[in-house]
Image (cartoon, rainbow, N blue to C red; front, side, top):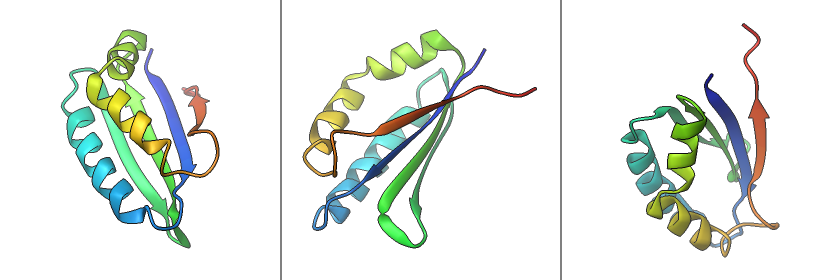
Length: 97
């Protein structure tokens, strides 16, 4: 079964450009992962500091491979300095059909 989630976070004022650069680089890497099905980062239309990232992985192992990647750990470590709160809020999704 696929592993599906979305992540939400709000970027601190002044960090918008850096986070946009970081997200572009991360997106490039993640989309090349063999187990990645979908990786779609968005910002809220009414507040571009609010991010929403929709992610789908082939299965649990593909997701584990994703979170174990060096570039993902580096992204999350730097992101912590640029966002409000303690980190991304993850919501796990289960398909209906």
